Image (cartoon, rainbow, N blue to C red):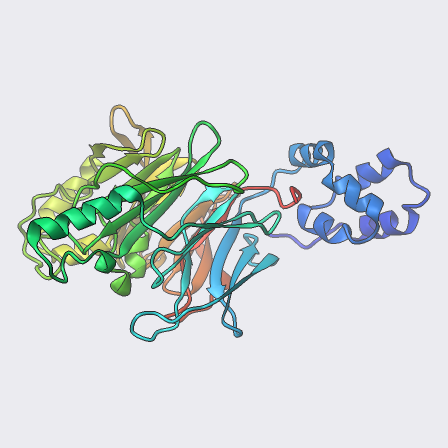
Length: 426
């Protein structure tokens, strides 16, 4: 739980007596302070800055402080420049990182917005909504930004022009009209990062996949390269212009594997009960080997609920109840049965497809666009509510507390990443 700060006395002692303190004594005092305050104190003197940047000091600070992950939010400011905020779990701003690029207009005149990919790393990844191939990797500790190339891979260019030659000219096969439908960002066993980019022409059509490798520091990258096509029925949100907040919650990366919920609706316009995809199933893309590997079945009770109710609800209503999250290092299937219950199913045994329902929250914890972001050690879970509010749910008391209100609107994102690195590493 968030507590008032109790380290002001330490700051006063360190600041007034630093000239008389031995280095090890000063180090001992500074090691007691949180990372946010240490970053501010680097301006006190060159010796303080040198000490707090020392790798041995940073390692000692990590060992002493069990710090909770931070939230990474992306939006644009009043001056139309991109901004990334790092916020703690009490809603307090820890670091603001302005970006130099101006927000560009979308294809129908809307102000372009940016959104944060759902990550749990010491780097975060930000994409544009309408400038659909604009993607950046950002290091919150240093503020360094790596802009990834917007061009298509050589392989994808060849595939798109091959389609045009095969089917003849027409708007459906013009390469420039194939937008990016989805991005994912994860880390592999080598310590390198990889981004997945899926290009398509809407639900249930060809979905071409490209992968790019970024080094472990987020400072260099290779080229985009074409890999295996994605299953046509994964939930990518379709066209970027109709990209909805619900679709962003249907993909998550856990342990180097990208997980996409499968779309079991018959079509985007048809709510018929007929379906060729088992409801709740999940397609897996392994970033290590860069291949689609298997289809993971939903928890058995959830499958039964979905199959039984396909005739009672529209497929679209059932589709809106499902999302994927990453909590406590596990893949989690979220069943948000609006105004009834919110169940969190943790995948505890991948080989045997074993799911455990660790939490079942009551009706007042549910609602449209309620999505779990982060499970904390003090028995709280952070949820995003609606389009712009983060709330903390206390599992012991069953009560919600407002944490932070996000910027909302058509040009600002409500997607949120999790930053797990140390802000001292700058």
